[in-house]
Amino acid sequence: MPDEGRLDHIVVLAPNWIGDAAMATPALRALHRRFPTARMTVAGRGAICGLLEGLPWVSSLVPLPAQPGVADMIRFRRALNPKPDLCVALPHSFRSGCLAWWSGATRRLGQNRGGRRWMLTDVVEPHREDGHIVPIYMGHEYLDLVAALGCEDDGEGLELSAPANDLAEVRRLLGDGGPVIGLAPGAAFGPSKLWPPERFAALADELTVRKRARGVLITGPGEEDTRNAVVQAAKHPLFDLQCQPPTLGRLKAILASVDLLIGNDSGPRHIAVAFKKPVICLMGPTSPRYSEGPWERGEVLRVAVDCGPCQKPVCTEDHRCLTQIPVERAVEAAMRWLP
Image 1 (cartoon, helix red, strand yellow):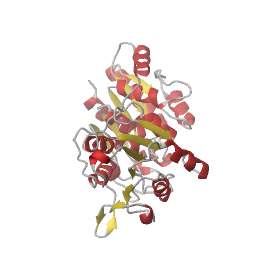
Image 2: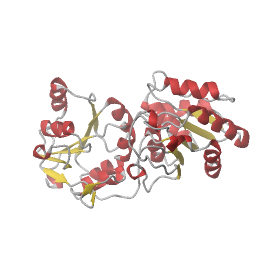
Image 3: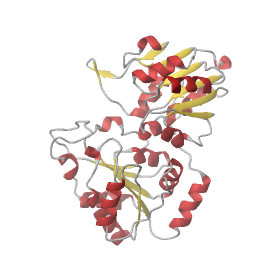
């Protein structure tokens, strides 16, 4: 690996999912601590760039489409000025290996997965048990990858920055009152992750009665039907603090302002963790080994079912992994964490 004194430019290929990108921030910070004088460019989807915007140790952000073509790769390479000394590919995909190779970086680091070994100069083997690749917490996976460069975890956990103007506007709209609860009933992964929206409504209503809580509904693009279902089922009004069109800056400001987040296993969960907020996570079809990290406060509510964790975006059974979590269980968990 290049000596620290000669390392001028690091390029990091970010994960595609918002939650994974939030979990990557300890590794990004560790890279900066190891190479403090190097310029760090992070490339990823537009939403990921919006999520990571404002972090003091990220020098620049290069947006990329989800499936970059030749013209996109040419623009990507031209944006990397000066030529990078090092490219770190956080995703496992063959496409990210192509981008690492196309970056022109002298050294290219990534996991030895996705048929891309020949595109990388340095590889780290994935975590295995009994010879089989098994999931680990994504934050630790990314830290293990950059540990190959001599980077050390500082133990501070996930980190994000919310824009000052969005923070001010959110706090103005909230005003004074009871505890603020973020409700995140969506999940970009697919409908198999969704706790029924009418249960989010019933949960918000019960906490309004018991704690004078104020519910803030948090949804993203494409989740309009879920949002409408919650609003129609709720007996008490819910705050709408998102701007139109929704931005990651406003989402970060909302999650930085709540007292508690209650949601499915999706991106807002990890953003809330980055802002040191407790989370009640309703987890269904996905393995907790990917997402349960040492920096999260709160509770994960799940039930053991014979068909899970299936990792399927769409349930092919009766969705019992989530429908067997009653509203009262979520209310009791929330009561333990509300001020």
